[in-house]
Each structure stands twice: as structure tokens, then as C-alpha cells.
Length: 485
Image 1 (tube, rainbow, N blue to C red):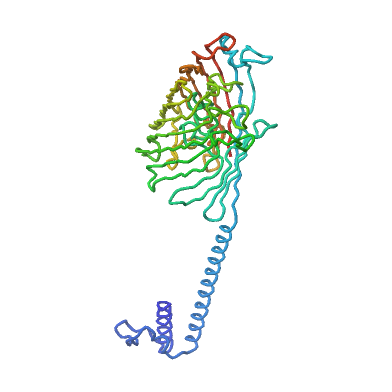
Image 2: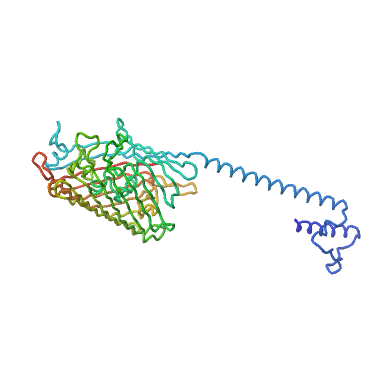
């Protein structure tokens, strides 16, 4: 403001002097010295021009004050809205649709009995099927500033919807998240990953065997270091899958304690090159002596489909009588080299039984590799140690090239292969020994829609006899259209 006053004063003084004397302006060295002091203009005598200058200054001051008040009011209104928003629960809607087609072109007679061990179709070959694998609605949000919630329901079977995630949580409990409700147990990388982002249609046999359906009622803590190098999860869970009836009834609580520690020692090139390592464990106490006289059932049972969507589990230990406790150890490795992705897990299960029955050792592993033909890469969510969304370099069909131009895009193309092994036969328990190879082709149309193809060839041996058969070979073909929002 002082600069403006000085400028206007100099202009006014020069103009008045020139007009009054009727001569050219004085040279700079002939001008009289200006008064000293920053406020000399305030003390100068005012003529008509000076009055006008003063009026302009006053108007300018009033305008600036008005702007300042308006800005202050706008900031206060914004702050009030933010505080008001934090005082109310928030709501966000999401979901996913997975539509499948499964074909069973070839299988040995034994596979027919594994698929249909009894009933009117006993011994018949697995039937082809068209079905929705997942039709989920997801609701989630925040409760004020420190809590959150999530509700996820699957309508793939319209007559019998089941819930998945149903929990509430606290954001900062000793620097971690506390989650209470139905949630995933941290056991098995492939099941810890969201089904939206996995490379293959179905999870490996060993992962399904030891953590079928993954979610259980429990209380857990999730944490991550500030640099996201380390992350961890641990908690206590009930062993029963409650997704249908929503309750566990029984005097034997059948609990498990689970924990997982993961790190990402390599994370470079904006997430194109990275490494993930983790170790997970579980200690469980099932009710191995449960009878028909009690409501709960023995949860010491391990079973899996053949990495395709069959009607029945082809590997199945049944409920293991006399099971007192079991301990599971899981090792995880996953690494990305630009478009090349490799991953593997090994899991071990030691089970103890009472009444002089033999203890059991069950185990299995898988290894997989994938490659993007179009140059994309798998992404890692470091804070939780799991796969994240693939983002095609160019979307399929119509691509916005900006400047009003559109063109055809290829989307993202990925090829992959997986070898899987699971041994669930030991002592008198004949769950079966399974091996399979899966070949995959994934076509990502954009970051939220894709088309997947799988071909699975496998064999099951050393299984409890069904129809007189203990083994069999099979081929399965599967495809899926998947979207999420």
C-alpha cells in the first residue's frame, strides 16, 4: 500500500508542478528533496487531486478487507463442513461379478466317483456348468474419525446368499488396526489376495485345503511400518465357517491363533520391480471327539476341489477323529521383474490325535509364473503384502488419445502357468495326493474388467476308495468374465 501511495504522490506532484509553472519538468537533480518518514504522504496537504487519491486508497483498503473477510468466511465454512462430515458415518458401495463356464472334456472313471460318490448320479463324469462364481455387493465406510466398517454379501446362489466380510474396526490402536468380526485369516498368500486380482481362476489345492473359504469370526490386529517395508497381521478366530448360519453353537470353542509377518525388501522403478517374502503360522484346537450329541462338529477336516469348479471336493480327509490340535506353517515368495512375475508357497500341517491314534503330517506347495505380452506388470500393495490391481497401458477397443482422437487398443494380455501339489494321505487318513498343471490366458480389457481362460490337467492318487477307485486323471477347461466396481 505504501508503494502505491508513493507512486501516486510522485505522479501527482510532477503533474501539478508542470501544469502550474507552464514549463518542462525539472531534471531529477533539480527536484526538491522528499520529506523523510514512511508516512510523509499522510502529512502532505491535500488538494482536489489528493482528495481523489485518498478516496481511491480508502476504497482499495475496503475492497481488500472485504476479500479478506470473504476468504476467511469461506475457509470457516469449509472447516465446518469437514468437521460435520467427520461427525457422521460414511458410505461407499462396491461389488464384483464373476461369470464362469466350466467344461470337463476328459476324466478317468475314478474321477466320476470322486465327483458323485453317492446319489442318483453316482459314478457319473463331472458335468459341464455355466454359473456365477461370485456376485457380491460390498458396503464400507468410516464411523467418525477413528472407526471403520465393512459388509460384503455374495448372491452367487440366489436362494441362499452368504456373507463374507462383516466387521467393524478401529484405525489406531497402538499404531495398528483392530478388526472385530468375520474376516480373512492371514494364512496363504493366494487366499490373502483378493479374487479380483489373482492370476488363475481358482486357488491352488494346498491353499484351499488348509484355509477353505478363508474367512472366520475373530478379532485381529493389522500393522505396517512407516516405510511399508514390514507388515503383519495376527489374531484369534473360531474354526467354523459361519457364512451361511452366522453363528457358532457349542461348548468347545474350537479356536485358532494365527499370525503372519511379511516384508518387501525390493520395491523399485515405481513398483515395476519388487520382492515379497512372508511367513505365516496357525495353531488350532478342534473338537476331535465331537459326536451327534453336540451341536458343533469336528472342524479338523481338509478338502479341496481340483483347481476347477467341480461340484465336490476331490481331495477330502473327512472329519479326522481324535484330532486334538494342529499347527500350520506357511512360507511365501513372490517377485516381479517388469512384465515377468513369479510366485510360490509351501505349507505344512502337523496334526496330533488322542486315544493312541497316529499323528498326521499333511503338506503341499505350488509355483507359478506369469508374463505380460503387452508390457504391463503385477502390482504389490505393500501395506498388506498382497497383489493389487493391474492397469493396462492401453484399454481395449476404444482408447482416448486426447485432442479429440480415439483409436483401437489391445488391452493387457498375460500368459501364465502353475504347478500344484498337495499330499493329504498319511497313516489311516486317505485324503488323496493331488498334482496339477494349470495354463492361463488373461485378457484385461481395462483396470476393472477382464476375460480369463484356464486349462487344468491333473491326477489324484492314494485316495480313500470310491466305487472301488483310488485314483484318476482329468482335464478341465474354464473361462470367466470378471468385473468389479
